[in-house]
Image 1: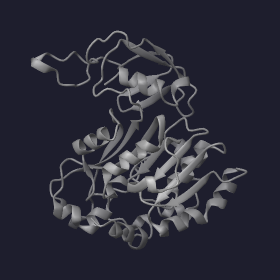
Image 2: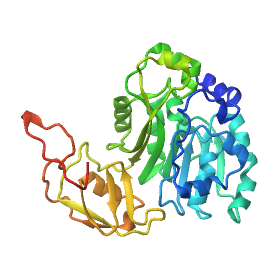
Image 3: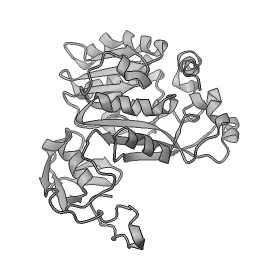
Image 4: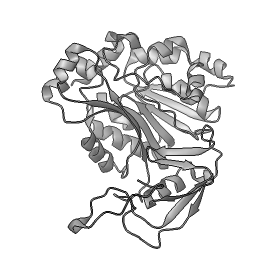
Length: 349
């Protein structure tokens, strides 16, 4: 698919969110209360030009430097700007001039709305496949987000490689996107409407995993996912049996992560202190870590928490001096028919 076709679809064909033909680029209704408060402070014109498929509001962002890939009219930038506060910064990158015009038109409005003394956002025109061409310092961002944009990219490996180069050590790539349960035919991938609706460029689950790992993100963690319903009858007929999902992942820029969940007899204790995570911290869809409870984890999870911005909120038990095999319940295939350990009731995997 030609990238200019995508620019035209989002810059000229789509005027508001209501012009979409599917729910692929739509966030679900069950939005957390704190996110609803953030959205209530965003300019109405920005809200009408929202094409995201998930929530990209990770926690513990106070004072952080955040990059939004494919920021559009600034919906997520302005939500995140409230979370990073006056001492933080949010940079949005998009290739569509029409969307950026809307985003830039309301910078001052939002600064006043948030009660800030100075702007803490800025917007750059550019391609997420070529982040190196922008004046962005390598290893300078704490968090990178993206919301239903990578599927539109014509060079997805370049996006992940560029994102990793811009993250600080221990930084996080937290993003929502659309995935498919199979590799799509060339005919579907070249259909301009199917592509523009965030379906034609959807990655097959295993292809995404391979691309992320080759870029250096060794242990992708699924945070949440949901099935997408294709309500447009004509598009559904073209897509046949292919099924699509909206999913949110978090990838950490940590060199020491291993390919599998290895057991070193470690555990963590969540001490609390993260806003909007008073009783428990959710790392991913199978790590809900209750405050004050000793929680067994694999080596990768231990490192994700210890090497990232979450470190001060946890106590860390153990080290890497003794290896105990695959973490129970990890799901990693063992050689020679060896039986996998029974899954633990808490902890990793």
